[in-house]
Image 1 (cartoon, rainbow, N blue to C red):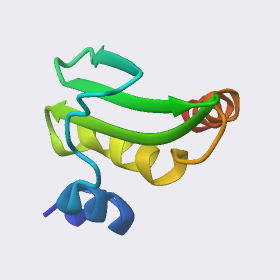
Image 2: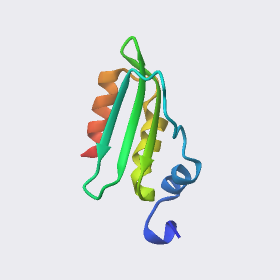
Image 3: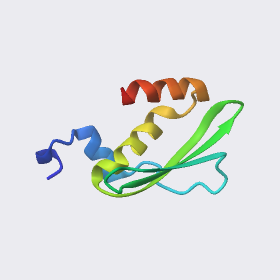
Image 4: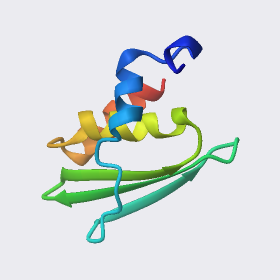
Length: 93
């Protein structure tokens, strides 16, 4: 059904597997985002020496709401905080 509505196979994989969808009790940074539709995402980052060493997320909303969290986790680890911010800017543009 997700494929029929336009979700890619990668997006479907993130939705089904929900990589690192969990709360992180010892996070160095926690941010919460509320979408205009009411979907909510909370992102947890563990940062050591300006490098993101772990990331996780929680989401409440439609299938599309959790996809950025899964993508971010799959592409964010091991990067400097500044490098990750640049990558996020490129993804959102």
